[in-house]
Every structure is written in structure tokens, then in C-alpha cells.
Image 1 (spheres, helix red, strand yellow):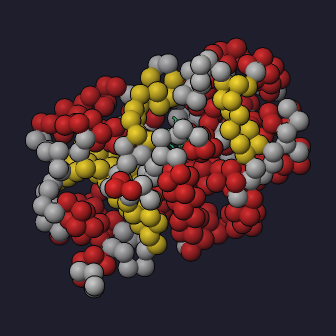
Image 2: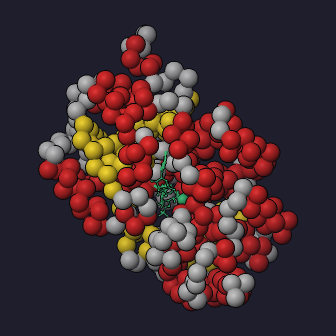
Length: 383
Ligand SMILES: NC(=O)c1ccc[n+]([C@@H]2O[C@H](COP(=O)([O-])OP(=O)(O)OC[C@H]3O[C@@H](n4cnc5c(N)ncnc54)[C@H](O)[C@@H]3O)[C@@H](O)[C@H]2O)c1
Ligand SMILES: O=C(O)C(=O)C[C@@H](O)[C@H](O)[C@H](O)COP(=O)(O)O
Ligand SMILES: [Zn+2]
């Protein structure tokens, strides 16, 4: 059977990655210029509904006009709600305000929330979609590298709490992900680098060849063009595989948390101050720490720790806690934050450790004293 003409519009020249989740399966479209033709894709999914676009002020300036024009051209009614850019927006008060705005606009359960932005917007808007009227349609339109390679895929949505990062939320899959790689042209170099940490993560988890490819091709990826699109699509394929195997993180999905146990504690320790540390930077430092901690436990060769650090530094990412400007709390405080991590089971710490590049694994029951000694030694560098 031939697909209807409008079905091919946005997909022409785009790569499609399928996330196989039974009746919750969906496509990720990756390619340049997809925002301009997103209206047709959304119209096919909604058949007649309206959308609330949730975005932030930066993305509204850079990318919203193209989306609005595309929705208008497809005859889709829309309203827009923009939040302040940055991690502090992932909080209860912003979530509450957005829920009220969506309800005030009289959107129905069959209408859609469209998240146009980075991971902050995606996580926040996804939680709104999961919550308002007990679940609205949800479409991710990621505009940061981090969101295109990671946060828009897999259905983790939520907000931060004063007790820690992402502690309140829901698993709620989108019905479609539209990743317009041309949107990355307006992203700042710092935010592009931060997103690259999550790209490197896929190599470090279980794909040493991909890590070697990144070492050889990072210049092209940062420059844009085909290598960048390939890095985005390859990352989506990697994440889609993990999520399809373990949607609710009962087992190996936790591998996607490589570097995050340390990284999240650091983000929380700086009170989500993006001037000091953004998520991807925390992940970069956390991945170096995870490799160094694994080496300390006699699991990972020192050469691999050095290679991870060298690559992250080459692209301009921080790798040590001393790279974070300002004072950090003592190791005991960091450990206390880590004890609130969602991977904690019956009080026992879980870390993603590694036997080397591409050989990470989930370790339950990690000794808190080992973590404390390790963090104390790492923090000595700080002084
Ligand atoms: N749900 C998940 O699976 C998952 C995965 C990874 C990260 N996350 C979450 O994602 C968040 C980090 O996401 P992020 O790095 O995208 O941060 P972000 O959403 O804060 O975006 C980074 C900055 O770039 C700006 N921006 C985004 N796209 C732009 C564009 N095309 N042009 C110009 N400016 C643009 C934003 O306004 C913001 O200032 C964290 O809260 C993290 O916890 C979630
Ligand atoms: O999708 C996942 O699973 C991840 O762990 C991806 C991470 O990059 C992401 O930062 C995620 O939000 C962390 O989840 P959390 O459950 O540790 O809050
Ligand atoms: Zn992450």
C-alpha cells in the first residue's frame, strides 16, 4: 500500500528509529529541517486535535516561529507556554503553572502537549502530559543535542525536589519524536558540548567501537553535517534498544545512568545553578569518576580512565570536581545526596561501574565507606 502524500513530507531525507514498546511503540525522526514540516506529521497523529506547545524563552526565539508556521499550514490550532530557560524550571511551581495553563486553554485529553526544547522542557512537559486529565497525547520536539540523543527518548519525565534530582515524575512515552538537527545550529557551544557527554556515554556503556568512532570523528560532529546526524541517530538507536528491553528500569536500563549517580549529586550540590554546572557537564565529571572509582576497586584499567578523561577534555568538557567553579560541600554531604538516588534498594547504594570502555555493569550494594573515601580523595584536588 502506498503511504499518503503528506506522510512522506517530514520523513523525506530523515532517518527513522523505531522504539519497540508494543502498543506504546513510536518513531524518532532525525534529520535537518524537520520543524518546518512537523505540522503534517502531528496532524497525522492527532487527526483533528489541538496542541499546547511548551517551550522556554530561548527556544521560543530561535525555533518557535518555524513550528507555528508549520502548525498553521497543517491547520492545527495551537497555544504556547514558555518557561524560563534552565534547570530551576524543573520544579513544582512551574509544573503547577503549566498544568493550570493547559487546563485554562481547555485542552482535552485527546489533544497534545508538544515539548519544543531541551531536556528541561521535555522532562517538564512530559510530566504535564502524563498528569493533566490523567494523560494527554505527547510529542517530543528536542532542540538541544542532549535532548535529541537522550532525554526525548524513553519516557522518563519529571521534576527535581529539594531532596534531589528527578525525584518526582512518571514514565510516560511520547507518541512521536521529531529531532530537527538543524535546530542545533542555534545551540550554544557550551550546551552542545554538554549534550556530547551523553553521546559518549553510549560508547562507554557497551560499544567500544562507537567510542573509538567518536574519538576519530568528534571534530566533524561538532562542525555539523552528516557525522552529527549520524551521531544523533546512532545514539537514538542505542537508547531505543535499551528502553525496549527494560522500559521501567527493572534491570539494565540503569546502565543509561552511567556517571549520573555522581553527576546528579553534583547538580544538586550546586543547587541546579547552570552557571556552575549543567546536566551534561555533571555527567562528564560523573563518567570520569565512575571509571576512576571502578579502577580504585580493581575493576577498570587505568589506561581506560585516562582515555575517557582525555577524550572528554579534548572536546572541552569538565572531568574533575575541581572544574566546577566555587565551593563544593564535603564528601559526606555528597554521599548523603547519593543516598536519595532512585537506584537505592533497601538502603543499599547502586552504581554503574565498569571493567573498561564499553564494559559497564550495574553493581548493587556498593560500600558507602568506599564511596566516601573515594570522594574525599577526589575533593582534596579541590583545595
Ligand atoms: N528524561 C530523560 O531521559 C533525560 C535524559 C537526559 C537528561 N535529562 C534531563 O535533561 C535536562 C538537560 O537537558 P538540556 O541539556 O537540553 O538542557 P536545557 O533544556 O536546559 O537546554 C539547554 C539550554 O539550551 C537552550 N536551547 C535548547 N535548544 C536550543 C536551540 N536549538 N537553540 C538555542 N538554544 C537552545 C535552552 O534554552 C537552555 O538554555 C536535565 O534536566 C536532565 O536531567 C533527561
Ligand atoms: O533514560 C534513562 O534511563 C536515563 O537514565 C538517561 C539519563 O541520561 C537521564 O539523565 C535521566 O533523566 C536520568 O534518570 P534518573 O532516573 O537517574 O533520574
Ligand atoms: Zn543524563
